[in-house]
Amino acid sequence: MVNQVSLNTQKNYLTTSQNQLTKPETQDSTPVDEVVTVPEENQHKKWLVLLYSAGDNNLYSYLFDDINELEKVGSDENTHMVSIADQGNYGKQWKNAKTFYLHSDPDLGKVNSPVIENLGKVNTADPEFMGTKIGELIKKFPADHIAVIISDHGAGWEGAVEDDTHNKFMSLNEIKQALAKAVEIGGKKIDLLGWDACLMAMAEVGYELKDFAKYMVASEQLEGADGWPYGSIFGKTLADVLKVAQQMMLINVDVEPKDLATMMVKAAANFTHSLKTLSAVDLEKANLVAEKTNALAQAIIDNPQDFKTVKSIISDTERFYGTFRDLGHFAKQLSQANVSDQVKQAATELVNALNEYVVKEFHTNAHPNATGVSIEMPTWGAPSYSYQDTSFAKDTLWDEMLKKVNS
Image (cartoon, rainbow, N blue to C red; front, side, top):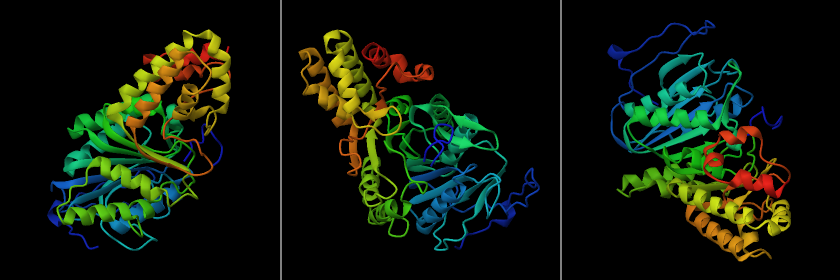
């Protein structure tokens, strides 16, 4: 789902009464739910799936549906499923933010899972809040593996997560700060970072967040408003993937982060009315991609006679939104173009690095040349000034190359 700043589009559960927590009414005097301590707290399981649902904006109803769909599968003996869910002033069932421990429940009209914390009016686009709350839940619901899915508007290297009440949109650097805080408090690296948000499958995003997550699943292109197909990713009603993973774990089959990431992409390919692209990448190879991208940029700078050809290839490269284009398609074309051997070799090495980085990807016929990773690639001038704030721009010659080629 795309950030409106950039684009104007688009059950039973046990109540431990002696440990019940109560909080005052939220700031707008909306009555609060009963808060409970669930028996699953502090139980070590194989997976923690944490949905960070930032719905204080025009996506509130879609994000509510996402939580409801995830609740259809719910937690089991091997998986914790938790959601931090902000509905701002828009929500129908609740206002503002709550944290739910999701139990299996078939009712699509209402989230019936226990509320484990009433958060009140919060700024879900604040890195301190995001990092602290995710970290606390990682500690509270321990697991071998952690999947964090961030659901809201996204704008690639420009950032993601919009909070209308606080008129705030998170920059990529702030997201990095949030995940750093989450990992610090939680005490372990995130195994799978999922983006239910538009345009986040960028080289710049993976490179920025590589130190805090092992795998990342995201889309190169815009998503439909209904976002990820939780019904396709996590079970027949909520998506086969998590349900199948639960069944596999019940018979003592380990589901590793790479497996779950791959299963998500495969399942999402059946939901093409909303998703045109989706890819899973190995963030441990993000440094390699940056290194080879930098080497290609240097090779192009060293061969100014190739600038005209490079500029033409940029124009022919698979495009998603604005100046976001497919890095693999660009490198593949260069490796076969009438350019210097130095540029050809560097392009070939980048293609090989991307093949290691991309674990699994799918694309529809709308984007026949998508390879799973996009990058800032304007056909004129240099990237915007704010692009210089990304670690990718600081650590590579990519933006310098673009400025020379497009001048």
